Length: 103
Image 1 (spheres, rainbow, N blue to C red):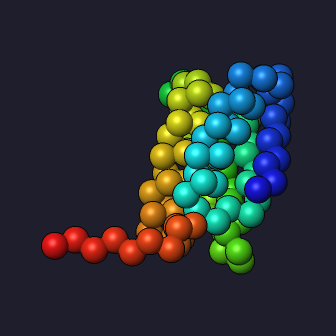
Image 2: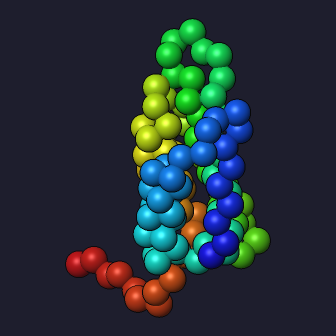
């Protein structure tokens, strides 16, 4: 999986970069993710949720995108990753060929 992380008008953060990579590697081990793009931005928001994380995944022709705005980039990343995982569960096939049968 190719991972591209961009910080728009935000200083580079090694901690956030490592956190993104760990989240995406976990998702990549369960789903066929070819490419991931993550964008961090800060906007002027009156409610205090001015930190935005946008994540785009390419899954063999399918694109999945999630965006969250929170009071910190860590919270926004966590929320975005949770939303992406929910979308993956509904739209993408897992990498394993196992069949789950519930009785």
